[in-house]
Each structure stands twice: as structure tokens, then as C-alpha cells.
Amino acid sequence: MRLVLLGDGDSPHLLKWARGLAPRVELWAVSSRGFLPGFDALLPIERRLALQAATKFDGGNAALLKHLPRLVAWLRPVRADWIHAHYLTSHGTLAWLARRMGVPGRLVGSAWGSDILVTPAVSAPMKWLTQRVLRACDLTTSDSTFMAERMRALGAGEVMVFPFGLESMPPMPPDKDDTLFFANRGLEPIYAPERVLETFAVVAAKWPEARLVVANDGSLRAGIQAMAESLGLASRVRFVGRLGAAEQAAWYARARWFMSLPRSDSVSVSVLEAMAHGCVPILSDLPANRELVEHGRNGLVVPATGLSSAAPLAAMLTHAGGIAIDNRAWIEAHALFPASVDRFVERLRQLSATA
Image 1: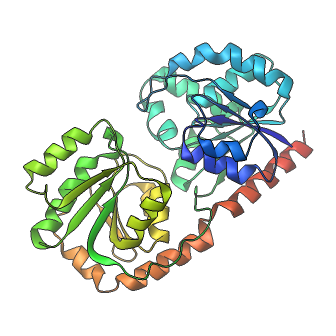
Image 2 (image 1 turned 120 degrees about the vertical axis):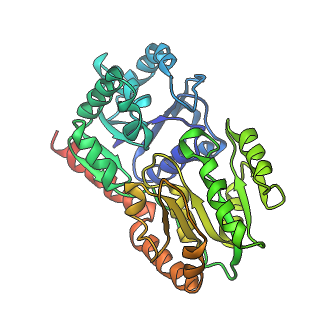
Image 3 (image 1 turned 135 degrees about the horizontal axis):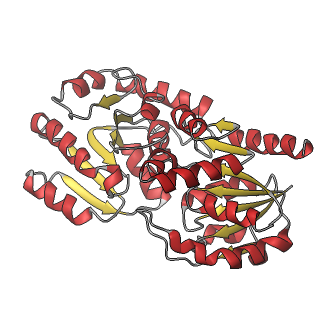
């Protein structure tokens, strides 16, 4: 079965999909930008196309469309069985238009979060476009039940639901620092890093030894660093920038607490990773987060009004070791990516057989 992966090849998430699919299909790939070095071991250069578009994190990527003729010319001789688009309102649009221009292959789409939860609400044209792409797909995937319901409401047919989980379980960390908090979502408006600082400030007022490590980068970094200064937290908040996988795993392993407080989200890979490393998740009150965390049992859900006191954390600290064991067990049972890719590929084979 010949499958073309269409997305951002500079994203580690697309690379993870490629690692999952490469042993199971004849894999080809198109990237709107370039390709991470990890693709070199998975795909020969003749099976890859890098469009080198100047895409932006916050959307507005209509300029991608100027690359459509080149994409169509490359895809036609490939004659894929499936074109698998990631992020439906950009790469999904390219795939849909390529099909309308006669490119062989059926469409499968994977939603990543804001392409379903945010973009369709931006304008009527964007909602229309999202609906057209979803209806053109023979199969779509979602990483949460909540987002799958939104996709069906927008016109999607069959939706497979599975977390964008871990490729393998990390070892159980030997020690946890009860005073260490870790956050690694992008420093962009949608991820609301200011909520992380505000929540930590409430805890820090009661726990003088508490410390926060903020990984990742983004357009808000300078403002968030200034905010830490203004809150009197500069000596207790450390900004470490973008991290490699090994460095990030080391912080997960040390931190007792993991903070992720975005304004909109589906099931976050970072939250799954943190749970697998035995962290207690502190999450924003979103439907997809409620699929992972029961407030007070295996994590905390912070309301939009913010955390009023550190008391809930103190209560959870008394059984944090048990929470780590339970969360790891849940990840192992429900959120390992290879098993999900097996089911996904098998469903594609079934659909191919009924074409």
C-alpha cells in the first residue's frame, strides 16, 4: 500500500508518524517546509518533496496554495493509494485541491487540534473550507473524543480516535523533586503561558522552595520573562528554551508537577509524556483534558478563573507516588502509538479492499 504523508516535515510530530508508518506501508512524504534529519533514515530522497514554504505558526498560510502546481506534478506519477494530510486547514486543503486536479489517491486526514477547535470559528470561509476537506476524506483521525465530535458536526464521516501517544514507555523515574514544576508548551497566545506563571505564583506564595522550569520558545517569550520579573519570581523561574528529546525527558523525570494551561487543546502529546514519566498534571479546564484527568484523583484541572490556593496540590502530594503509578498504567494501556498505527493501517487496508 503506497501512502504519501503530507504535512510539515520540520515537525517532530510528523516525523513520529513517519517512523510509525514506514515499516507498515510504502511511504512517501511531502513537506510544506523542509525535513528533519530523522527522515533520512526512513525515506530515500526520491520519495520526498520539500516545498520550502514560509509557513507561520499562527495561521494565515494561504501562500501555500502557490505551491499547488508543483505538488500536483510530483504526486501524479507517484499514484498513491492514500494521501495522508496532517493539519486539515492547510495541508488538508492542498491534498483536497490536488485530488480535484486529478491526482490519484484517496484522502485520509489527521486533525491536530486548532485546525478543528479554532480555525473553523475564525470566519465563514474557513468553516466552509474545513467542512469540504473533512467530507473529502474517506477516513480521519482525532486524538480525543471531544474533537472527534466536533469533526463529525462539521461533516466528517468515519473518525478513528486514538491518542497521539508515546512510541515506548520511559522507565519509572527513581526520584521526584516535590518542589519542581515543569512546563513545555509553546510560548504562543493559544498556549497561554501567562496562566502558567499566574498559577505558579499562587503556589510559590505558600511554598518558598517551589521552582518552575519553562521549556520551549515562541513570540511571547520576552513578555513572559518580564512577567516573571514583575511577579517577583525571576529567581524561581528558569527559561531553558527549546530542548532535545533527552533533555526534555530528564526534566519530566525530575519534576513532580507538569503544567499545561492552554486556551484550546485536544489531547496533548506533552501531557501524555508527562503522565508516562510520573508527573502530576495541572491542566486547563478543557473537554479533552477531562478525558485524561479526574480532578483531585490523578491530576488537577484549573478553572478559567485560576487557582485560588495551593491547598489542592498539597492534598495530592500525600499520594503523588500512587498517582504516578496509575497514570503510567493508563498510558501503557491506552496511549502507545505503535498499536494505534497498526489499527490505523489495518483500517486503510480494509477500505482499500472495498474500493
